Amino acid sequence: MLTRRQFVIGAGTLAFAGLSNSVLGKVGGKLIAKTAPGYGPLIPDADKILDLPKGFSYRIISQLGDKMSDGMHVPDRADGMGCLPLPNNKVALIRNHELHPKHLDKQPDTIQAHKTLKTYDTYKSGVALPGGTSTIVYDMTTHTVDKEFLSLVGTIRNCAGGVTPWGSWLTCEESVDKPDGDISKEHGYIFEIPATATTLVDPKPLKAMGRFNHEAAAVDPKTGIVYLTEDRGDSLFYRFVPKVYGELDKGGQLQALVIKAKQGFDSRNWNNQEMPLNAWFDAVWIDLDNPESPEDDLRLRGFEKGAALFARGEGIHWGDNELYFCCTNGGRKQLGQIMRYQPQGDGVEAGRIQLFLESVDESLYNFGDNLTVTPQNHLLVCEDQYTDVVSNHLRGVTPDGKLYDFAKLHVQTEPAGACFSPDGSTLFVNLYSPTKTLAITGPWEKINA
Image (cartoon, rainbow, N blue to C red; front, side):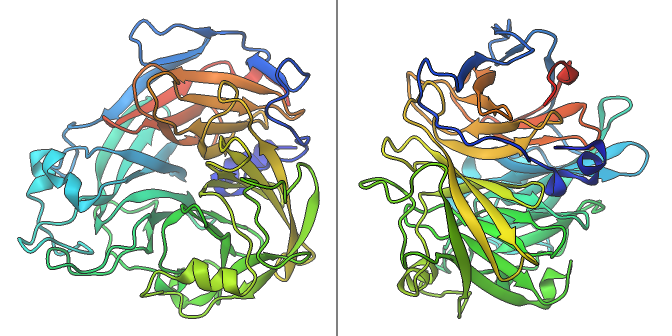
């Protein structure tokens, strides 16, 4: 169970234990609960932004175009985000901006003209590429923004990432762009942003962690091993074993997961049910060479060596000696899966993996992306689907496997970067575009795990 001590350590070490295995799609069955237990139905938002249960409310703490403390203006496409504790009851919200070079002309004027020595890559004009992160220092006592600034620039499509037990945010590029005459460097790397940063950090790509379509990261606090997802239809599930705990820049070994029972196992279930619900599969890890992968063939080489396939690995969250990650379009209906992985023994040599959830009904769960855990030990998943008839939600999953709607969006975008304050009182979440960052408070205590 989730304890208060585990919760205040930070999102990287939150527990999500005791959750029963669930089938999403038993419509009318015991595993379906369309209203949040203990909360009741969603209340329509008068501002038509976000419906929440009774007693909950949100405030917009930052949005596209707001002037920040560094003179820049908030960029668009806010995606993954981490919440890390700071002194004096403050937190650092480190927020990704999933911006491609082609998005520059749609950003605020300050971003379009931003030239700095602390940029990873620039256009020929010297202007920094717009991708990167911004940091919001938020005062939990006054519920106000203390300062806000760009903390990384010059990257491409910073999608998701993960917090570390040593107080930083790993921001991941979902890109494998190469120099093309306009940009000058290769992309597809992870960068580390300390929670204590007060300005732009020196952009140092962690190249040993691999060059691929990175999505998210989660750190095992016991071993320092970083588990990594990849947003591709034929993605692998990776991990990085560092040489030195907490010092990722010192290098290490990139590996991919292999199902022991079958080389090249296909967990996607698109055609055949190779991975049934609830069944545990023993897994081992194989070393991958040439992690910088100049030909963008890391996943192909890994598969040839026996690594398992996953359907668009996205959000990932470390729990109590286990982790969960979303496969956005996995399953027979291609509506999404959630995988559950548990390290075995010392957590280094082997583990086991399970198909935890698979959706067969878009009204229950549709394209899960970022995910987190509530103080009440519920999984909370951000949906990422763009259609004219389906609204994106924050979907909850209770410890006994029931699904419910915690929030419903009324704007045609996705919720992203859901993360809790260290004391569990506030849920922070981004609305992707136009960027809005919300602080959600309410009677969380009404639910007991």
